[in-house]
Length: 173
View 1 (tube, rainbow, N blue to C red):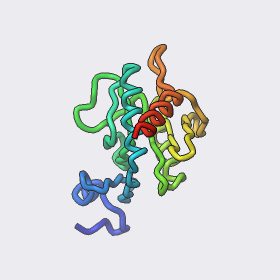
View 2: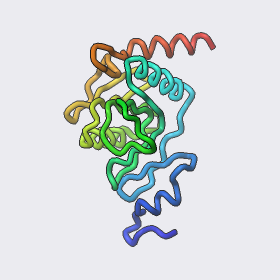
View 3: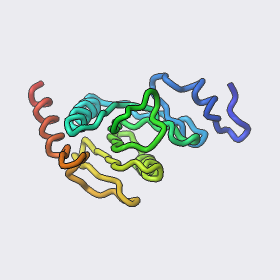
């Protein structure tokens, strides 16, 4: 199927060509952007994050396509929502979104995603660098190092808990 005259894909063309196929792609204003390939530590961090966020009362999932804006369909590493749960794709703002950096992720693309998420009204935007072991919260257009992954009422999921569990599991192997 040909792309539009300007060389950009329509959303419909993108969905026919790329949706649901591995490697995964995201739709960015007419472009198909391939997601970075996840490493084992990346997947382990996703799993632990989801457990930590669930323990404080969220329902979390990984690799969920967001259909909040007709021009963008990003697929964040982890999302955490309050009920009611989306029945298919997430189509409105929710509580927490997490992006875990891969070695080949352009940081400029991650910042662009954060700005997009913030514009949509997502409450907490987290970026994790597993190699440097840094965790940031994106607030008012700026990345700020944080110790809290998510907060619900008086309960918190912390960065300390995340790295302690990663270390425990990696040492046991």
